[in-house]
Amino acid sequence: MPISLSQPQFLAIANAAAALFPADRDPFIAAMAAALEGLPLGDGSVGRAIRDVQCRFSHPEPPAEESRWGRDRPNFSRRGKR
Image 1 (cartoon, rainbow, N blue to C red):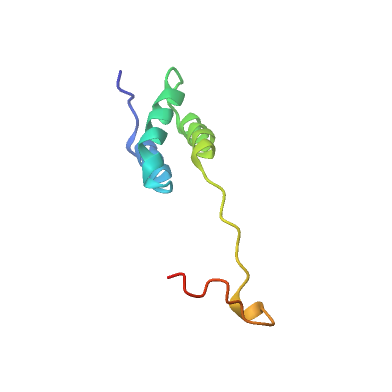
Image 2 (cartoon, rainbow, N blue to C red):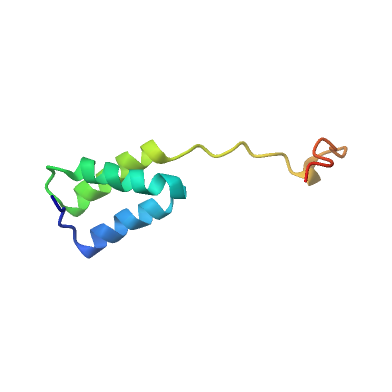
C-alpha cells in the first residue's frame, strides 16, 4: 500500500538516505516504510522515524589517526603500501 507523504517529508527521507553508504540506502527506505506503516503521517512522526531508523544504519567513524605533523619522529609503517 502506498504511503502518502508531503514533498517536504519525502525530501527529508531522501536526504537522510543520501547521508548513508550507497549499499544501505535501499534497506533504509524499506525500513522507513515499515516504521511509518500505521502511523499518522505528520512531520513529527516522520522525523522521529528517520532518527530511529537512521541510527540503525549509521556506522561509527573510523578512529582518527595522529597527524604526521604531531609526531616527534617519522612513521614508516605504511611505506611501500600504495
